[in-house]
Image (cartoon, rainbow, N blue to C red; front, side, top):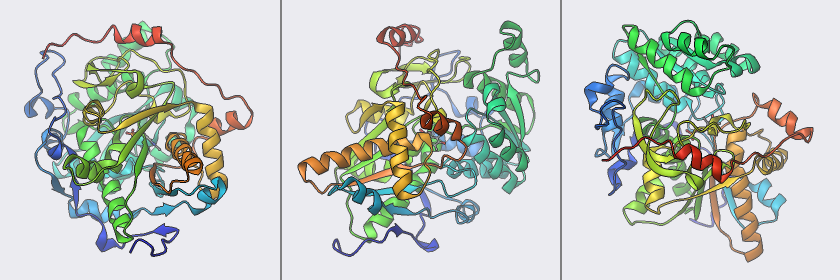
Length: 458
Ligand SMILES: *Cc1c(COP(=O)(O)O)cnc(C)c1O
């Protein structure tokens, strides 16, 4: 089996696609710590989450015992429009690097929204529709999540209100237009449409907004309008659950050719693509059936795993959302502008944080300019123009392949290529013009932010 020639692209047939998502928490001995109510600091109950999130999604969020959760047929049908996604053998990159390593990547950019976020967007829209809701609200920074959600909502005929960080709304008009084409209403945040938006505008006239502020607006609109709920595109357990489709497909494709990876690499913003990609492999590791090196890659400008603290913190800057125990740089940490917008979150998924804390995975941080060098090298030989976020994983995959070149080891590397970079051409322009800078927070900056973590004794 192992010597069977592996094709450039391993595609699965429709009938080989996973019929259930895999809930990694079921196999964890040390479960992720519970979300806390920001007011009482007590673990959140389902009924406290129900006014904000859809019922079925609350159940998934709190379920840490059911290993497999069936993917409803309606969602599987939607998945079939762009899944299974190919697992590509990077023969051209291996040749270019002259490495004995075998490199594979799972490509999630093959849909109009251009990233893996659609895997969870369609699930969240489905459960909202099933509950008979009118619509959903959300925030978006760089715009990938808002785009994915607008596609999912139009499919199920749901209203979609997106609060887009004002600076992105103005500087990234193209994603905004994709969202509007799919029928979403896109409001620059902070706005006059909410109480919290008005308050922020009064205090900080002319502000260009932040993700934390957009979250506060989206939550307010969801809770004040009957028939609406709020949805989120990363960090939460439910999102990691939906994204497990990435890892399950990867595992099925590798098993077809008898391939066992030595290491699995993914970029980490809130942790959803990485959590999804590694899910079945980490499951085997937790059950003692196999061992893999699992590597999270984050930007040096926002190093939650590598330089953050494992503690309870707020998920948003406005401090209205639940507290989560995670690796965090502090909810007030403002990363310097980095072109990988999707990786600029101060915290990390509670599930991945616990696994990292317990030594089941590693993390590295990489500089922006070295990330774009890797992106360019990859684009020139593999053809795909990668998203800046995804290119963090490419950087480390290349570094590991080059180590194999030195040692002569034929390691098998799998990494997640989460999306395409067509909407990130301003970043590529900066790189091509030699104007890209690397901004790394000082120890003092991180210490000052972490010093403001909420005090929680639980
Ligand atoms: C949002 C995004 C990420 C990071 O989010 P995670 O939840 O950490 O996966 C990575 N890549 C792309 C293309 C994204 O849009």
